Length: 83
Image: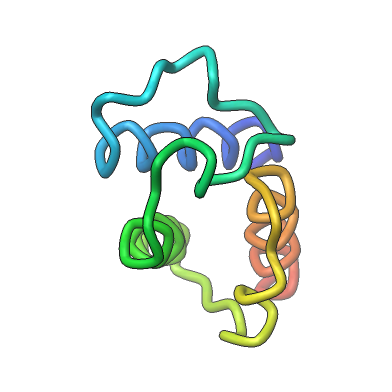
């Protein structure tokens, strides 16, 4: 899976958890908090993405992620570790 595919997956999860978010606001530099996600929403988005990709990211690493692009990179890295 390519990085763009991972971004698409993250976008789907964001829209699933936060249906009122404008799709055009979902950009790599956007912060989930700024899109209206509380801590539970952010966790749900990350957990759903990890489950769909069948990867795990260390909770400490997840806690340091600041925006959607960093989540995308962390998921991509986790996928490549499996290969």
